[in-house]
Amino acid sequence: MPIYEYTCKDCGHEFEELVFSLDALPPCPQCGSERTEKLMSACAAKVDGGSPGLGDRPVPGGGCNTGG
Ligand SMILES: [Zn+2]
Image (tube, rainbow, N blue to C red):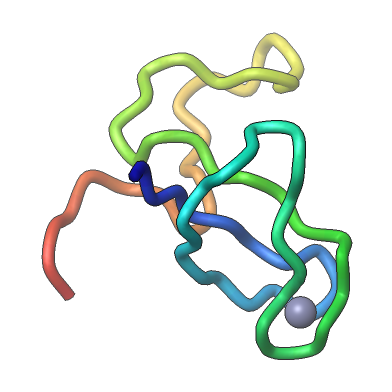
């Protein structure tokens, strides 16, 4: 069962959730909001939805660091 990382658009809480359906987003466990968004892989080289010309703009909450 794949586990994906999500972030809440309302409170910014990040959490991991088992994925049963790629079409359904899990609600935020902290504030209960359904406005969550699935995060891409931490080491993803491609950034979708970004405007051209930003260059090496750091990604908030991103990075390839492991552990914690
Ligand atoms: Zn939340």
